[in-house]
Amino acid sequence: MIEDRGLRTLREDLQPFAAALLQVLRQYQPNVYITSAKRSRRDQERLYARFTAGLSRYPAAKPGTSTHELGMAFDLGNVDPRLLRKAGRLWESWGGRWGGRFHDAIHFEG
Image 1 (cartoon, rainbow, N blue to C red):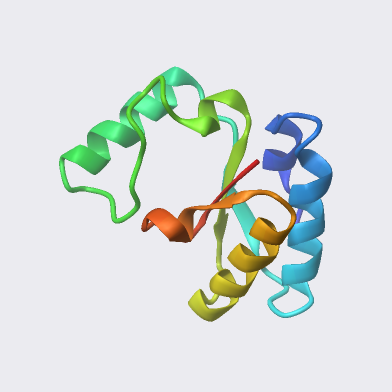
Image 2: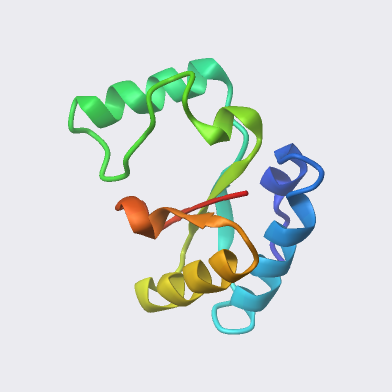
């Protein structure tokens, strides 16, 4: 199984839900993983600069407004787009917010 160091950076109350989502997804696509979880302000600034310069295909929130900076969000990698939609619906059924509603399908937040 892939180790998800990103899980440990999330807020403690969000960790079991993120782990459960990964467990469900890996039944269908075993190599799903967390690409990004809690970020420093500096990391967010870098990602935002890349996004606003058109160098990233993924959106990034303005520094100071990202739930990643609070340990309340994570992004997934290596997920089929159809599976992402199903994961998003499942995440929302658990009370979370899925980034697919705002053009960021790999983003999940608590």
